[in-house]
Amino acid sequence: MKELTLNNGVKIPILGFGTFEISPAQTKQSVLSALEDGYRLIDTAQYYQNEEQVGEAVRESKLKRDEVFITTKTMTDGYEATKAGLDESLRRSGLDYFDLVLIHWPMGHDLDTWRALEEAYQAGKARAIGISNFNSRQTLELINQGQVRPMVDQIETHMFLQQWKMHEFLEKEGIIHESYSPLGNGQQNLMSNLVLQEIGSKYGKSPIQVILRYLIQNNIMTIPRSTNPEHIKSNIDIFDFELGEDDLKKLRKLDQRKPIDGWPAEMREDEDY
Ligand SMILES: NC(=O)c1ccc[n+]([C@@H]2O[C@H](COP(=O)([O-])OP(=O)(O)OC[C@H]3O[C@@H](n4cnc5c(N)ncnc54)[C@H](OP(=O)(O)O)[C@@H]3O)[C@@H](O)[C@H]2O)c1
Image 1 (tube, rainbow, N blue to C red):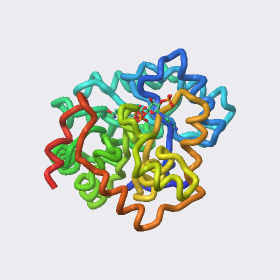
Image 2 (cartoon, helix red, strand yellow; image 1 turned 60 degrees about the vertical axis):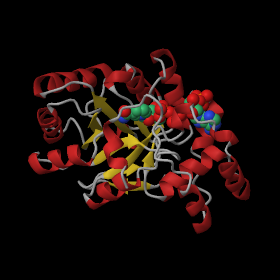
Image 3 (tube, rainbow, N blue to C red; image 1 turned 90 degrees about the vertical axis):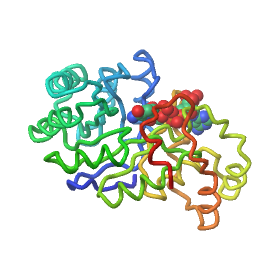
C-alpha cells in the first residue's frame, strides 16, 4: 500500500475504506472484509453511528492496532461539546486513540472546535487532526489563528468535481487532499461511462478502478465505500498498473465542476477557476 506523509511526519495509506451509509449491523462484516483484502485505513464518523462496530472489527481482525489507520470525524460545534464528544467516540469504539480526527463540516465556532482537536492531538488521543468540507477561506482561518496546522482536508472529489483549485491550494499549504465520494456516492452510472470503459479496457481494469487509480496517481487519498465483497476486493486492486499521460489528460477533461445533487455547498466558492 502506497502511503503519503502528513505535515507532522505521520504516514497515511493513500487508499482506505469508507463507511458512510453502512448500517451498524453491516459495518463489522464490511470492515473485516476490507481488512482481509489489505485495506489499512478505515474512515468512520460520529455521524455514521458505526464507530463502535469499526472498533470491534479492528480488534476481531487480529491486526495490531498500529497496523490500521482509523479516522473519525466530530459533529459538534465548539470546544466543550467537541472535547466531550471525542472522549465518547474513544469510549464507544474501544480505542485508546484515533489516527486522524477531522471536523466533519464547518459550523460557525470552528476555531473553538479546532482547539478541542488540538488538545486531543497534544494529549495523544489523535495522531493527526484535520478538517472536512472546509473551503480555502475557512482553512486559512484555522491555519492563521490555530496552534496546529490541519494535516488533511477531506472534500467531495470525483470525476465530475475534481477540485483542482482546492488541490493546488492544499498542496501549497502542506495539507493532504482526501477525496470523499470518489464514486459519486453510487449516483453517477460510472460503469457505463464510455471514456472510463475505453481507458479501462486498455489496462484490463473496470471504470471504477480507473477512477481510483486516477485519484491516487494524482496524490489524492481516497476512501471508496462498498458492502459488496467483490467490489471491496476489486477497489483495492489498483496498484499493478499506471495510467499514461494521454489517459490522465482524457480523465481530467471529464471534470464538470459539478457536485453531487444535494451535497453541502461550502466548497462551491472554490469552483471559480
Ligand atoms: N466528510 C464527508 O462529509 C463525507 C461525505 C460523504 C462521504 N464521506 C466518506 O467517503 C466515503 C465514500 O463516499 P460515499 O460513501 O459517498 O460513496 P462512494 O464510495 O463514492 O460510492 C459508493 C457506492 O459505489 C458503489 N460501488 C463501490 N464499489 C463499486 C464497484 N467496484 N463497482 C460498482 N459499484 C461500486 C457502492 O455500491 P456497493 O456497496 O454495492 O458496492 C455504493 O453504492 C464514505 O463512505 C465516507 O467514509 C465523507
